[in-house]
Length: 75
Image (cartoon, rainbow, N blue to C red; front, top):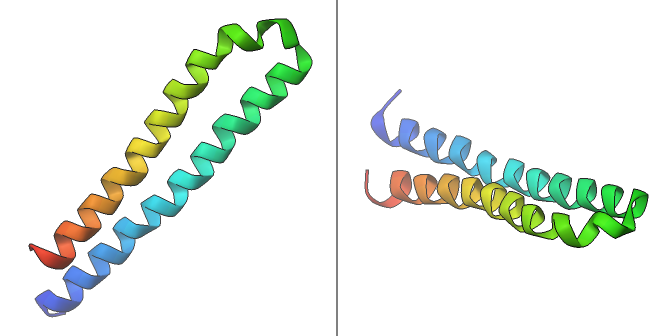
């Protein structure tokens, strides 16, 4: 396998991480809504944790995107 093919394969694998991050974001919001519907009184207290979970999942997606871009254009 030559270097160009390895670079493209690595970038494709890194792009999979961005797709999986979208599943993580959906899971965070689904669990929040599930908990909010079970106990509406506690939903306001859990909203901060919702945004922290969203930010963490989105950070992983952005990180995998940056790795893919670096592999394509820099390496």
